[in-house]
Image (tube, rainbow, N blue to C red; front, top):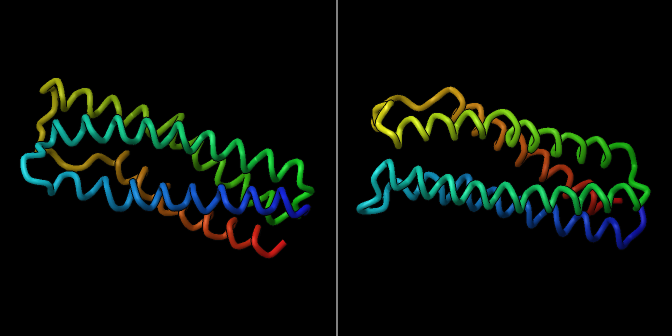
Length: 145
């Protein structure tokens, strides 16, 4: 893989990783522990933050995909790039819309605020965890090409 493409893809991958770790695994759970933050307020903030994160993730994914495509990447890098892109697409196209519909119901009062965590939320967290692992593997693979 050519050096500029590998360097670009690697840097962007680690920025992406940092954003996911910072928001999904730090900001998201902590916001509900802040004084005065109710479930409806936390849901509203979370929706805005994750909408922004996902938009940035999509842009970062495009940069990584282009860098890998033009850089003559080896098969393992291509496979990891495809894997992280698919994980993001599943989150954006299938899981996030379901989470948004549920938060709409909670915010409108159709579901209790203190109800159990949704299955879709657990799926999203599982996908985020796998995505973190794939981003780490991709970043390392890009550093070693």
